[in-house]
Image 1 (cartoon, one colour):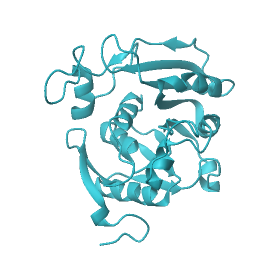
Image 2 (cartoon, rainbow, N blue to C red):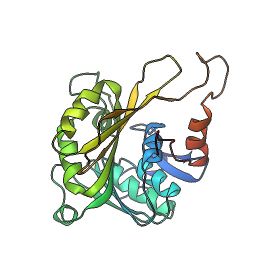
Image 3 (cartoon, rainbow, N blue to C red):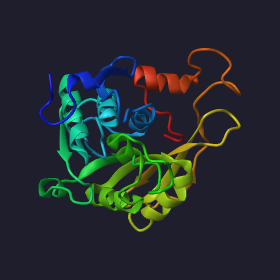
Image 4 (tube, one colour):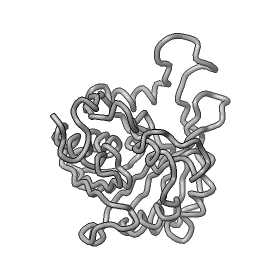
Length: 259
């Protein structure tokens, strides 16, 4: 059966997340989410009844993982690519999640959305600056991985949509941290950075940034969350650390330092 807007059923696979707590449809060829949006969702310090907006929500992986962990959230997402926005709507319905998904460029949000504010904004922007990597052949992957909208505009949009004292959580490549800090200046404060290091003694490849609208706390660089046990991958199968296994398999909250 073909969907009126996006992918046909034959073009999709059904993949379990959070130990099977949710099942998400993803394109077999195209952008497919890994663990990054799961980590992003696990980092958000949301409480029941709060409002959450995801910028660039793709097929809804981070938004729906957060909703599976924290009950009674008012979930909204913005996605540029219409087929992926439609897939996010399908995934929300299939997992009995109430989520409003908008098909829009984050720099030109619909008027109705511009009138709303949120307790939390989350984002997993494209990791690579324009021209900094070999572009993917698939258009969906190319848009998801390669920066089209400057990172500065992601922060501007997030800051505008956040309620006073609201939080932004963003996951990005570690080498983009200077860009994130610069983009937050004058918009968001109380910046905290949690590096995600693949193993003990290895440099972090990803970071999660937490920032607060109106925050005045000092910048804080936390010790890294170690993703894998051991100095190297020495056996078949997964070797995730215990906290990471709890996040990926049991929908646990990410152990944010000092929380």
